[in-house]
Amino acid sequence: MFTDRQGITVWLYSLKHAKSMRRFGNVQYVSRKMKYVVLYCNQSETDSIVEKLSSYSYVKKVEPSYKPFIKTQFENSKPDKAKEYDYKMGI
Image (cartoon, one colour):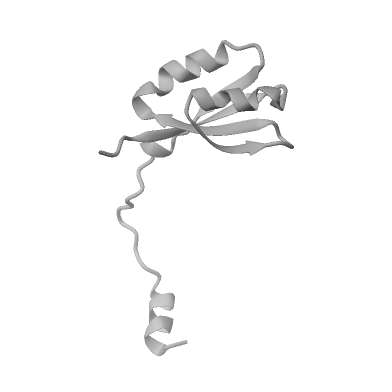
């Protein structure tokens, strides 16, 4: 039902082509000051979309997000004893 999504940041020379980014995925954010577009697409299609976007002359740089590949469950994380004592005291 749900597909894995991945973000892509597209740096542009001019914002007049920002509206055309909608055909590659869901446009999440457009920065007018720094001239970039954040869009989300299916993770299986990310490589082909990055290649296609980087071939356009109005695109400065294309960066895929690495968030789906980062491990978010941490091992060996020990709680701080001082904070644990403060929570028991009710401070």
